[in-house]
Length: 470
Ligand code: ARG
Image 1: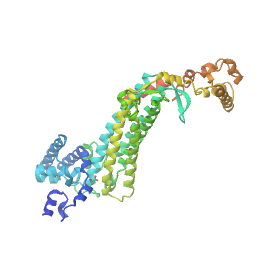
Image 2: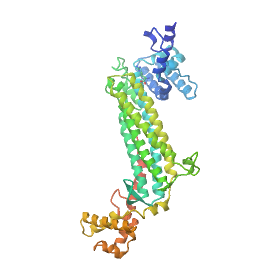
Image 3: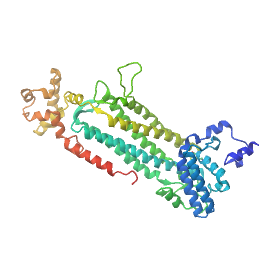
Image 4: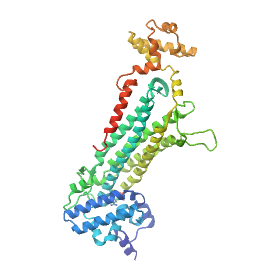
């Protein structure tokens, strides 16, 4: 009786005489999460069935019925009418069983010349390719938000920092475009990652390929893959592509986390550099005056789980002999979680960047302290003939004297300035102003008004041109 039941339900029940222990079923199932691959699984099966029919491996009319059945199952799933069964273990066997229940024995021909091992690898690659497209759009969105900021507040000068200490004056737009560059690299990195994802393992079967006269080029083409995998053993056990994708996700998250940290600092009352609309902040249940930057804090906090996923998969893979091992099933939950985390973080941070308002008055006031133009004064002396090290020393002493008297360099009058060094003249005043300092930094990649305007227009044209799939 038990055996009969097992044979009826389990697609691999043939050699088993006992039904699966409930605990084991719960422990081994993956359908609770890998059902997320149903679109890719059905797409892969349709391509496979069409190829089997075309090559005469199964009768054409069976291939046709399989395809129609799979299309109906797709509809059922999308409309929420499909019943997922844990006893059927994973997305692949749930769909295959439903197909056979629907169209009869013809459904049993679908798994000819195929194994779940090449099937799951195919599905996962298709899934990642689809997701990379969506991620790329989200990245484009946040880049546009930075362009919006850079354009809208062109001309606003802020203190630039190193070691979180005031360093030199920079354009706020230059700062915004720095983030544009980070997300640009993230998109380029994904585009490079695609080259390794875009390989079709279908036809590798369990591990050794198949004796049927399949057409691997045909299924690959139909599924939009640009290459077929060259080694069946590698193809069913390789998850480098997933690892690489997780690395790409981790870098995106690291960039989002740095941005978050910066905004949290900027929103503190001590800095007060930016204002976020109320809709993007939350309050405190006890302190009525609070408006907290919870969104960036959560993004910063969630970075840990994305890195965690990368390391979890690294660790899962490190001990695996060739070829497929069930450990590989552990690739999916980690990747799904990291992906969802990055996507929602990107979406919400795009809103934050779009809506944030720099507090221009505070920012400008803040450029007046902290000796932001000390380097400019040293450079001024160098241009008049002093070796840089000597100039550094002169300005360092001047700064020390200013600190003693509670003054800033630009507050010294001409007599005091001349006393600093005989090479100092009237033209030093432009050099000591933050405006003058920024205006002078017109080398490529610098913060000068002219080059930042050029960088902005280059950023815009890059955004128009870039395509994730080359
Ligand atoms: N659910 C499995 C996975 O995600 C599918 C492949 C299982 N293959 C096998 N021979 N048990 O890895």
